[in-house]
Image (tube, one colour):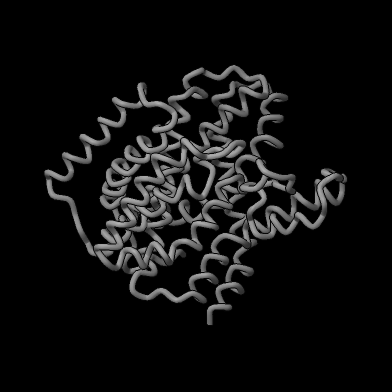
Length: 342
């Protein structure tokens, strides 16, 4: 039985799962369209891509907030790094090892890629570096590399939160970065797939965590302002230039973050166990869903001939089931890494 911590916040786990849904839906639809299935244009168009961006922003906001809640006032490098490694690497290493063994060792894939570049994969940076150089990228995409590098920046952000002057300086720097980086980001990189592109959301999440830790609620006027900000962002999106789109979508995601969090905090306690279990598998789902979709599920759907809509719930259930297995198999290594902090 999964033990619930005394200060458990179901709202954060609801945000975690809500962030995953648009990503899964979009990947399912876009890969199905590439495989020749008829997919409604609305599910692979700009509007759906914007909701995926909101989900991604929630991931970075949530990561910053959760780390702040865990480490503010008690930060220490050794347990912090051991904890981050234990949370991220074992499941990734296991998934990568299976695919590398099957593809490169047994079938000789990517013979032109120097074998030493497996180091990028061991570090979890292969997907992040793939646009720049040849790697053995299998799972994790750009997101894994970005969040791992942001973890190294977190202590600096936490230090900035300790004084009002530093918070104001950080705010100015993040506003400038959010507006300027999409304009100056060099090709072939995409601004939203880089550390600098996601740093403002992560930093804002750290501030959210500080607010949550202090128990700061929202007055009715502040709730009205959040709702107005969300509606304004939605109204502006059709006319927003590409250079400002990340900024507007982050503002929308930040406003909606608190709405989803508040909804989760109102869930009955009897639902917390299921919520925590599903949220605990979400990282595994993120790792396995794309490979499962492209190598197994869509080929099976093409052979079976059933309507595509039938396969989406199958995709969800299979992704969570495979993630549960991956998480369980990776657990012993995760525990061993955590013991390094002792």
